[in-house]
Image (cartoon, rainbow, N blue to C red; front, side):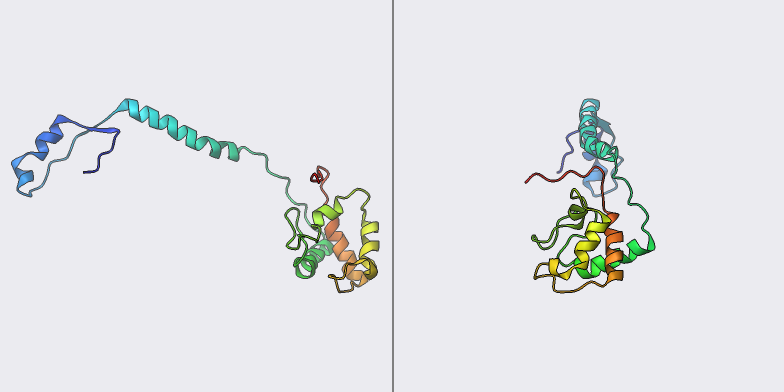
Length: 161
């Protein structure tokens, strides 16, 4: 018989279990139970300890919401996901699928990178590594730059080398 350690059976249970009706397969009377208060208090403390990480997690400060994207930035995001997402991480965080391709959020948070410098670099196909075997037209560059600039984070800290 399975016993629950924090529940103690009362003497009335023993009397009910040994009654003639229960031995003949008849209906058994309700089994009165007594709960051990000391064990219940200990379990309550244990439950509090289990719930503590959940409460602490719920109180964590959330990252700021992403700003609303302009039409050009929204189109740039779609282009980045379709054309660049195979190698680069194109979101606000994460690692790139290709370890040799820097994530967009790292690129735009480099010191000295502006919309102009990024646009100039993306416009020159001779700047691309061999793996990036395509050419961007001016409207694509403008939309991609508009999106990439939205990934800037004033609190960005470069990962240690």
